[in-house]
Length: 212
Image (cartoon, rainbow, N blue to C red; front, side, top):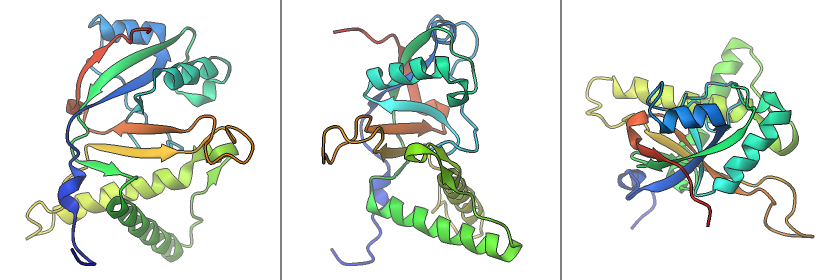
């Protein structure tokens, strides 16, 4: 193995994961009972942490429930109003994943940032900024990730690209949130992994989480 080796082969992650989505009870029950849309609605907010997609907490139903509970008193956390907190489980095949725990994907995101920075300099426009506690409003991160997706889409349309830059199905990232778990800790109270699903076919089914 040598420097500069392309490890893109490993961006298609094997197996499946369980994801959990916090929402209003009516939305969750309608989905589980087959009433209305087949899938949850993708989030398109300018401050979304992982760009556009259907959001899930990886293997963490409690964190999904906490989010839904917080949204009752803070409607700015989610576009749809949550009256009764509810959690929906999903079986997800990550497919081709922009995994922001992977060095190659992180390098691609860094390149997207530099390109976005250059474009804004040419346009004499201000760069988006992440704002708030724990950078909760991630205007910059979303802009970078969406720039990455659009760049791949354009590169893939070039003659001779031979499908070298296919669309990412999912985006995966880890976040340190909520302050120290204990004094001088290396862990946060609300550390978590989030998944944004961009290709709805990656969701193989929904289920009602069971209590232990």
